[in-house]
Length: 209
Length: 209
DNA sequence: TAGATTGTTAATCGATTAACAATC
DNA sequence: TAGATTGTTAATCGATTAACAATC
Image 1 (cartoon, rainbow over the protein chains, first blue to last red):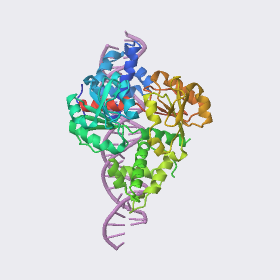
Image 2 (image 1 turned 90 degrees about the vertical axis):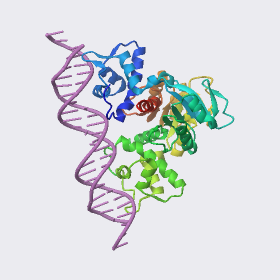
Image 3 (image 1 turned 60 degrees about the vertical axis):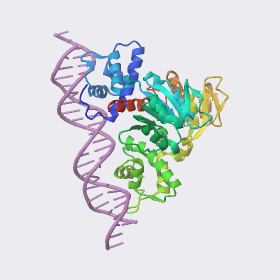
Image 4 (image 1 turned 120 degrees about the horizontal axis):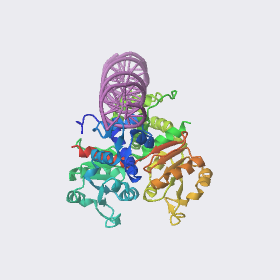
């Protein structure tokens, strides 16, 4: 693997797409795949794909293509999926339940090990074989179960408070679904999943036609 | 409004953030806001914000700032939110239920007017005051209720089929949550909301620390 | 008026595309 | 060998940042 200087965000965001496409190719029993075929399946140019992959090492064989199994393993390692991160969902409303049941997380190698809510009616129930704990016990449980990623699915008004607790508990990354810009230490990685952006941009485009 | 040549995707994706921040400022009773203050609230540079807005017209007052109400209305119009698009969710599993209950859609001016599933146990139930209809009746209902945007929340294997039906029924945009690259006519706008990208990129970043 | 803040042009930075040598 | 396909360098394109004139 090369010295990691300046891998673009755009490249990193394409890696999960490569990973998924390679997994599907694997399921189809394909042994070798070209950047051309990968590009065709993803509507990405083959040059782009080769450049993205080449920034992490030489994974292909000239004149041949990429070995599917090998490339999938390599891309998975680059993404750190082989770490099998322990994740927790905070806020077990409709969205939290949906996230707790999301099967793709398992496909990607994540382990759902805890759920939290503050509502006594929800605490103690079970979602996807995981018991919902009181958010008051979060810090303790995060440490106990070595949770590295917290998924925030609480209403916007509570999101910053939850983020603070997650930071204190020592998680390494936050995946935030609350439509709010949160303040976290620079050392904390946070990815905002803002659902209103996608729908609004769709509205923008269909308005102009 | 200026002639609309080449507004960048990045700009369009920031508009919903401006809209939301302006709405919150409005709720706080703020009349005038500067690009500096907007930038502070969103961690975006003021220059970027001024440039984004200026590509659509002159909404501010030099030496003063932007009138919150006026700018919010303008940004809403640019995004086409004043069209109050009728939307439908297809696939009423955990994710579909979560989306059907998502309150921010209402805040943005969208109207949820239909839900569809193929499971007889789900058809006929009610989610967020909307009855679930048989997916077999989709084309008819889409036309009847003038649905312009379809939200796909079915498993990946069924997504392309649903997309085809939506295209035939005449929707103008598709918001796709299935982790699959879909084939639609060039005239159709499609936004892919791929949840595995966010979580994987988080994994990438926390792996490297 | 003086201070503040926009809108716009120019400069920089970053990402994509094109071209092609290397090589399987 | 000939054909195919990667990896990489150079060229282009697009987006952000900096600077500042205009003006409220």
